[in-house]
Amino acid sequence: GAAMVDVLRRVRAEGGVTALDFGPVIDPIATPDEFGELLPYVSFVLANEYELCSSAGTSDVGEAAEDFLAAGAQAVVAKRGPGGATLTTRERSLAVPALTVEAKGTVGAGDSFNAGFLHAMVQGRSPRDAVAYANAVAALVVASERGAMGAPTAAEVDAVIARR
View 1 (cartoon, rainbow, N blue to C red):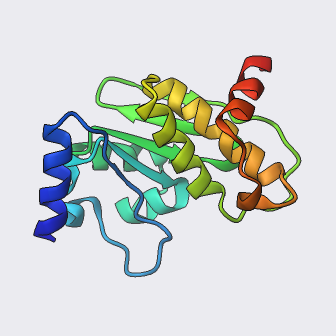
View 2 (view 1 turned 45 degrees about the vertical axis):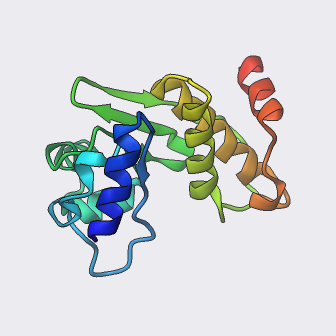
């Protein structure tokens, strides 16, 4: 509602990064237009392919991202699991590959991705590098016997990225 719009507006006015992850998808799902007033103050929409496409009413991730951009979002990050993630802005779309790992479980992967992405953005990394960082965080979580409870430290993520 209006209170959330005000919070997002104030954060953006102060130069902060805002993000919206509207999953998990439970019918009926809101469309990009229904997010209306929020999207102009959202730096990044973070959603998996299914959520993004379901919301936009399409099976094409690129088209879904374009719908969110047209509704006011600054950028869209489509999480694609072992397929990595795609960062889409008004200027371009970049596919960022995932790390190849043996998945032990996927619970918490999306939230871990989001945490990694936002951590990297706050650290001053570029959006492309933040997606790569987030992919690494999510990969390490799904490869852990403890899942999200075994989330990596920033140093562990940086070490994996450096070896890549």
